Length: 220
Image 1 (cartoon, rainbow, N blue to C red):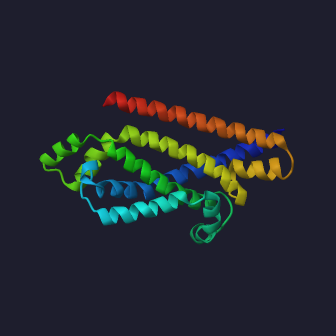
Image 2 (cartoon, one colour; image 1 turned 90 degrees about the vertical axis):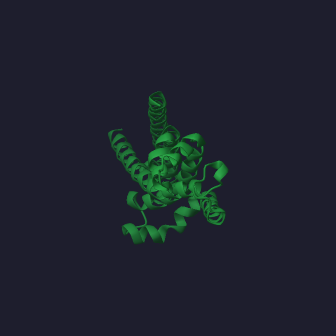
């Protein structure tokens, strides 16, 4: 029993590391893409510098990446993981496909959040002489922060599920523990423990995210 607890705690730590870093990297990748999707969109939808051709091409690329099955992406990106972190298995290797898989999802969330900003606020900022860059980081992003936080919460929850799936190729974490010990060695207690911990993690993230969104809305 003590051994199982230690293994579950270790796997939980690996899952937290995977989700934490993949969230950061997916934001780094997805934020500029989401902003570009919005600012180059139709002017009627809040686009600051409309560019239909660029927006259409970028939008299609994001759609293709979003529709790519994650389990296949895990396998396809094995060489890239090996190139970046020096290995194709383990927690570090799993962060690469997790980040890339979540980036287009993050981009769409950011685009949707920015579209919710009141056009009147943007027009007022333009009238005051704000540059396009100032419109993005001083108006759009601050005004969309509650929606962005809600989207970030959803992203983290999705990454928790993805991290469990990464266990199918030796990605470590709770998914790997459930497969190697619960499924392959016929120990259902490991499966149950992994599921319970994942459910608790998802619930905690959702509660924290909801409270942060409420605080942001109250300060507006």
